[in-house]
Image (cartoon, rainbow, N blue to C red; front, side, top):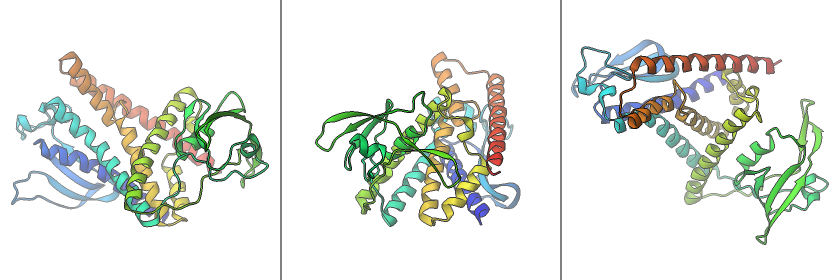
Length: 349
């Protein structure tokens, strides 16, 4: 069942991404050879003859995403397509919109899912406001109280619990953490706090501060809209922190999750029901959009980078050079995925 759920989630995310590319490609008159749901051998396919639509719509065997095969993504690649229907012959703005639309649709999907989650089940406080501070733990002993708002941790702005949790788990040179707190009366105070070390259920040492969010549930249509956009911004900001931490070494590559790690995460989320799975799908959709927006070869962001170079230099980038960059980027990504997968397997034992 976990595998089925994982495949379904990945299928939804990739389908939404490719649907964005498809809609904007059609909008700007790009010839789309095929729009597929799934990968592998075709099970069923058709063309809309009455609409004179040349696109082949297909359902493929393996439900692990889909694709939108556009003519001329890099250069003119078919004699059967009119020159003005190749993507490479469209304006820079049109090409940009076609490429960024996949990211946009992933973000839209995430916001809709977060809105639905809150509308159905409600949500707890998202701002980094202290909801619990048990006695005899570092937070309460330092003087931080329920209702105080944490605004910085070791120099990181943490206006949400998402960012606070990530900042707490980064590697630092010192075991002392600097909390900048806005007290309930509006004053700003700094606290130097050293966590206590305790054993978790797996017998591993963990740092414990003694701080938690409130458990009050907020509901309603407008509350849900506010939650969806705040949570979206919070997750996006958290990913920026994570990417920066990967470069500085504050987070190791072993902390990332590949297919095996995702299988475990989906299994754990499934235990808590549909609400948890809906949130996980929204989170992964933001993650997919965010990663694709990074200006790295083989990503949508990498292709957009070449459009920006073209706009700055006023010259068309050599398609062979662009192709080489994307190929190298793809190989590096596959090597990274292999490394992460091996690390995920090691964690299981």
